[in-house]
Image (spheres, rainbow, N blue to C red):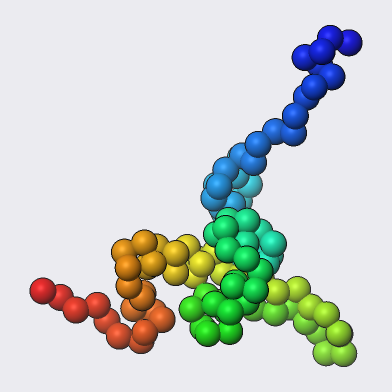
Length: 101
């Protein structure tokens, strides 16, 4: 084998946006790890955002189970991040409509 063949690296992630991966359906829900990778925020920070109602999530836990699967709304997470880009809170998190000029 040549040196080029033995030094293969893992392929880079197809896309930063999990909803646009090649041959994949748009994803509405992300697991916690995926949401952290997409947003580049830590797991504790993501749970803080969820607990404060700034990012929507759902827990898939059946009665009697100790652990469940927490899924984060991709749209909610993306909207939260976009609202921070502009320096304000989104109208969904404040419960008020944006003011018109």
